[in-house]
Image 1: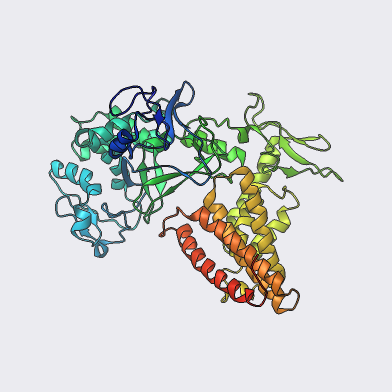
Image 2: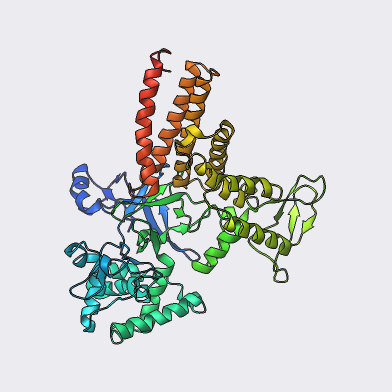
Length: 540
């Protein structure tokens, strides 16, 4: 917790020096600061916990934070399987496909991967292993072909284990929001009731945990669980500070993960002192109605952020459709996505030019039809993406979220399936790739500036297109060595920016692998530029 008075953390006398890392702790001298560092270093983060009647607990910056800085890094309080999952190794989280792919834990019977003692004796597996042994009978998993119901309670069980075995973590966990008063009438709550009864009976824990206690933990898992894609399948982890990050559809931070499962919260833009720290709980490239529906259904609140309050989404027209009136070049949007009259289930949409209106029900029907077409579209096919953009460009704004979704896919697809990559892509399609990357990246910087992964991937694709365009123009004699060098330098700068954006991505993730490839490409580009420069003159 932040220190609220200027008292030295070591000797308790009045102090003027403040820790430059977090601005939370004071010291009377440099010697006392050095002395206290072993204790303070794990807590030295430029954030403070605040509380609000509406938001509850949230995090704010204690000092200015620069874009790209790691705001904080945090280990999970608990991690475990997703609620819907097939059998996995409960030590490392790796998928188990059958009895030949696993060995039962010698103590409890749960299937483990063939990594032997490492997984069986891991700290991760201790909770269910302990509870199963107390039960008196080993577990026997026979069905490996589909999601297994026995696994849906394990993350809850691991949380319950903390109460008697790791009370410090338990105290942090139990303070997190469960939203059970809101969840009580949902299908998820009903499923959690089944899980709670199963936990009590199967593990013989009726006397140790009440159904209400288990349901509170189940709510905490649902509301605060983060999907961690470091394993296959992905697992769920709960973090203390990360659970206090508020949501914003145009967040100022993004999250990533270390190879060991720690969460990293990274500033996506410059953050002022006392500014709230936020991440986006939902895919920021969804439309406003879809984002708000998801947040209400899964996080139990109505988003009221600046982006949701602006139907134009900061002038991008991300949800807009073309007006159907002849010779009108306007676009239709509702007056608001936030509030609507009780008597009007589907609010009207109004044209920005001719001001004619269209009923919301017909708009909804059109969006539903286009969404189904998008879902049915052949995935990974350049021509299908082009046809979608050409056809629905007649109905949707160029920046519409459906158009953006397809453009993002197409930008990465071009050159992906040809034997020799971009060298076999026709000139016109290569130019399209560069324009797609630039257009989508520009849009993301407006709507979701903290989405470093998407930006980094787009810039990686863009650098390759720019370099290949330069090579072709030089080969055809359309540009001289100096222009080619300038284009390669542009490609290099784009690539360096991509590496910077992806620098925190773990190597085992797709974005981390792109980062490694980008570093190799950067070295190759620098070598090529040096060689070319020998014929051009001094580098600028």
